[in-house]
Image (cartoon, rainbow, N blue to C red; front, side, top):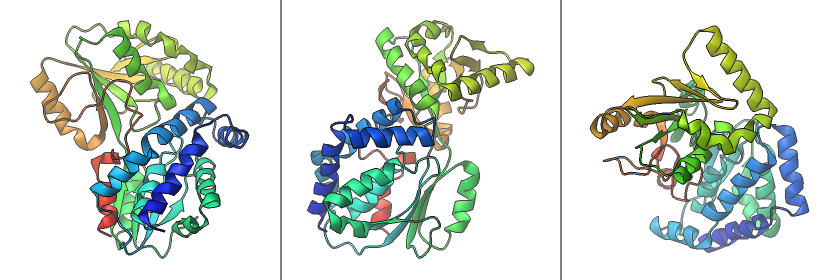
Length: 339
């Protein structure tokens, strides 16, 4: 297929996703939820909408192809893709990049997300049968030319060894942070709530830690985040929240909490489900210096203001990366072009 045909086939998926209430799409959303209770219909639809608007936009796809001078002369290679499954469709961007460049995606799905991605690929191939050449499903990867794998810090070490004989791009645990300046409007703080609570906080782009200025009253966020209290109706979240509250009480650790979220003053940027870490800072220079030392652990920095030398995201937009926003700030397409 030509690059124009591949772009056309991807934009066809946008037509599929424009009506999330279609019966076949609704059925697959419900099936994904039955297979993984973290994948609520609301969250699956949010992920599909993000893909629809940010990844499948024709103008954005054409611009990306032009920016990287993608053409029909790429020597097609087999790229092993080991996908994560912490939030719905989190591995779709790697598949899209591989297909757009013109390589063959050998896809090893996460056990947590085996329904949604095959549905989208099947829809694409159904309309464009020649696209079938670019997608292969694998329980165990073999005979590949390069690999992209996403996992935990522990599995990343195994991936580094397992794929040592081929070009590889290995991703591991990352979390996102937010910087509170004290000048945020209530609307901006509520938007930050989406960055914290969407997907139950399980994504690498979910904010798991706040940096707040000295003297800031963090308890006021309990009121601001009240719109998200329905999260406690989800059984898995509630069980994790209750367990973590009990754990902190048993260990006599200091923390604040209401009925659905905990605030704990702690240095690590990674936090337990239902808990948000926070840390005070005295001035911008101190804060920026600290964040720069942690950039290898950070996926996204949410802030209403600029931070010198640090890319920031507007509150409420952490889970809406654009087509050319690459995980871990490593250019996936550039990697694929050098294979």
